[in-house]
Amino acid sequence: MSLSACAGIVERGDPDRFMAAMAAPAEARRVLFPLYAFNVEVARAPWVTEEPMIAEMRLQWWRDALEEIAKDGPVRRHEVTTSLAEVLDVEAATSLDQTVAMRRWDIYKDPFEDAQHFADYFSKGGAELMWQAARLLGAPDDMRLPVLTYGAAVAVSRYLAAVSALEASGRVPLINGTREGLETLALNSAADAGSVRKLRKGMPKLAWAALLEGWTAKPVLLQIASEPQRVADGTVGLSPFRSKLRLLRWS
Image (cartoon, rainbow, N blue to C red):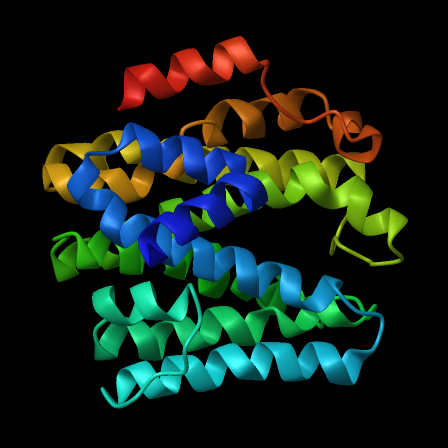
């Protein structure tokens, strides 16, 4: 039942990852749904309250849960933590702590400290989630860096689609929001997203399921590079038909 609950959380809170998980082999979903549900819960924690202290406490709750899983002792009961504890090992639980920590930026309205902080938001956030999913599904350790590179590009594509909403909420989401800055970011990230072709050749079949979530990344990033105004307009994204067709080809 807890795995089913995780699937429901992902379906409601992250439709793209839900579609990717459903396109994956059933065996992979036992890992993907708990991880993706965890990500949904962590991602929304900073947004369910206007009180920073409460948001910090919500994120700390998840960090404490990961610590309990890493220690292989009793884990607090929750529809996500129950399934999560069944699939995470010590390395995954420890590494995902940084994914939660990076979400502290979402609580406040301060800009990123510098370009490195901006890059870390994607590499330690979405990219780490992808790598741990791939690793738990059998990806070898020597694929860590290329998966993290690809995962960061996927995270950038999602983030740029959300920039207009972030600005409306009073955030300062970009280091360089000029047309040139967006073009450069999108083109560099599109090049990294294109590396997935090489990854697929050496990736175990089951582990490939963890990379399916990036099926729209490259075309979305190229769209932004050619039409940067879409970021401010909030019109980033593929048509539903093109998106589904691309996923069918990938899976």
